[in-house]
Structure formats: structure tokens, C-alpha cells
Image (cartoon, rainbow, N blue to C red):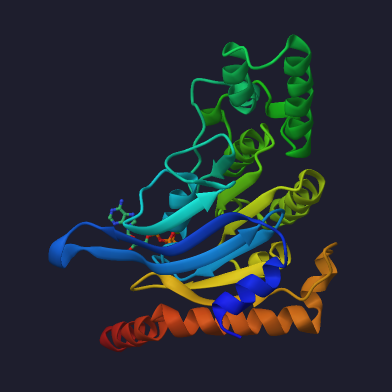
Length: 290
Ligand SMILES: Nc1ncnc2c1ncn2[C@@H]1O[C@H](COP(=O)(O)OP(=O)(O)OP(=O)(O)O)[C@@H](O)[C@H]1O
Ligand SMILES: [Mg+2]
């Protein structure tokens, strides 16, 4: 099956929430230009969880930023929630690779920020604002941040700041959640808790999630489909359906299906990343040191 057949087979009769067609992105011009993305086709159905993996520089963040409306594409078409993407929108929340909190607001104020804006615009009744503050408190607890509610971002560790950023993104119940290596800065235990938390939110709120990671195990554990991207030029190499029950549990990571898929995906990334050349370079370095 080629990539486009896998895409349509998986979607069934669900309408795509995100549809990318013939997408290309070139940074710069002339000989110094970088083809960050070339001819990307991808449909992501409503309430589906797609993870993107691939070597550094293969265009994962660029693709996510284009869907978020933060970057313009050079060619092709991007549709989200039935409309062409022309800029950022409240229907698409993004968690960035680097922490991105408002430094002058406390943890609680950061999480409530979007609701506060909406309340100021008069979009909510006071009862709705109250319900929203209950949600903010619940997210704060879920993220293990109760004790840090009144702290400012510069008083928090990197992992804590990232958890605040995730809570803030979840606050307005976005139909589409775009996450760029959101758990990269977390320790292994917190990361496992966050995995189960994000799956819980996914099932509860029927969110559509596009999730970028370097960690193949994380990509398989969370995703219904894993999209492997390749660099130079950035493109889709292969799409893998994850043969695990919807209700995940940590022990599934030890199952033969999981291990087999991990081996396959790691193999694709290794083959497309040019890593072999790097190892040869290291060998040369070693020889020079002797
Ligand atoms: N603003 C920019 N200007 C010029 N080139 C850029 C810009 N942003 C990204 N690129 C280039 O586009 C390519 C894809 O970058 P991108 O950040 O999307 O990769 P990535 O897959 O997210 O990598 P990583 O795994 O390291 O985060 C890279 O070659 C990068 O140098
Ligand atoms: Mg990136």
C-alpha cells in the first residue's frame, strides 16, 4: 500500500479535520534556498491522533507551523476545520518546542489567558467564566502544578514551564491540538504520566491531535498513525498504522507488535537521515585522536 492509500483507508468516512495537498515550503531564494517541505499530502481525520517523526531538519516543525497558520507555504493547499488556513485561529492550539509562556503572568494567569481575552471581548457570561476557572484549576491539578499556581515562569523548571504551556493550550478545548515535541524536556516518569493524560484528554474531548516527537516509542504509544518524514528535501517517507487497542497501557510497549513497529520505524528514520555518514565522520575523528 502506498502512503495515499493508507491515508484514505484509515480515514474511512470521517471528514478530514486537517487536509494538506501538494504542500511545499521553500525558505530563501537562489542557491541558498532550503526546500523544507516538498509535495506533502496528508489527511488527518476528525478525532484522530497522528504522530510525526523523522530526522532533525526534515520539516516537522515547519509542517506544524504551517497548519497552525504561523508560517506561509510556498505551494499547495492547507485546510483545517473545513476552511483554508490563512493565519492562526482559536480552533488550532499549538504547544511549541520551546517554552512560550508570558513571563509577566503567574502560572494560573497564563493558563486562563485565552478565556480572559474572550471574557474581555464579552464572549462569555459570568457563569461561563466561572466554569472556565474550574477547568483551569482542574488542568493545574492534572499537570501537578497546584503548588506552583502563583509562581512566575522564571521560578519554574523547564519541565514545569512546559506543563503550564500544555495546560494553557488545552484550556479553550481546541478541536485541533498541534504539539511540537511537547514532552522533550520532561523526565521519564513525568513523561509517562503526560502520555496517559494526553490520551485521556484525546478520548474525553474528541480532539484531533498532531504530535511531533523524536521519540519513536512515544510516537507509537500515542498515535493511531505514525508519519515518518525524511530530510533534504523534507517529505513523507512512510505512514504506519499502529496495531494497538485504543485504550493504551504502558505494558503494551513490551508487546511483539509494538517492538516490531518500533524496529520498522527506527529503520526508516536511520535509512533516510544520513546518520551513517555521521558515524563515518565520528570514526575519522576517533582515528585522528589516536
Ligand atoms: N525560518 C527559517 N528560515 C530558513 N530556514 C528555515 C527556517 N525554519 C526552518 N528552516 C529550515 O527548514 C528545514 C526544516 O526545519 P524544521 O525546523 O521544520 O525541522 P524539524 O524536523 O522540526 O527539525 P528538529 O527535529 O531539529 O526540530 C531545516 O533545514 C531548517 O534549517
Ligand atoms: Mg522541530
